[in-house]
Image 1 (cartoon, rainbow, N blue to C red):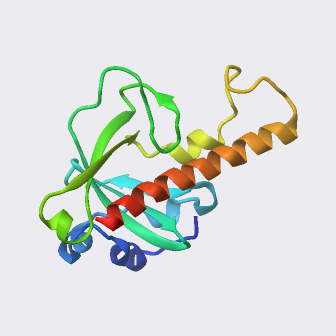
Image 2 (tube, rainbow, N blue to C red):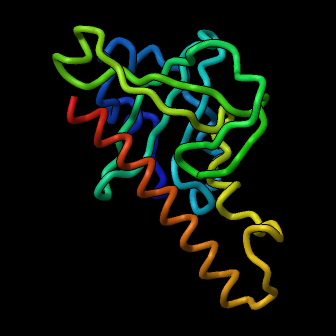
Length: 165
């Protein structure tokens, strides 16, 4: 992901009011390893039900406001973005208000993603033996690149659905 500053983040939100974007608590951007993330995601510590994601859609940053739907499920679930099966402690369902008039009327779209936004780490991890049975570095590199591309495609697809309103 290309580095973004706080001003760019606040102006990138497509489903939040200007006031919401201004009040959003931002993470420490100096601590972000931009080359290792496909999107920036964080929880607002002052309002724990609010979460934010900034990702690239067609080389432009797009910010999304997400709301947690309650406590995490007690069973395993598949993250819709990184497609990793994660336990209920780290998985959560989120809803995002749609952009524009539809969102102002209260319409939302939902997804299940990693609660701590660890998708970028998940797609870069070594594959488990049930996923890929090889030690060939070229095959492992290709597998990793495919997982990264899939994460970018699925997360951008969600952002596009929010933007279509």
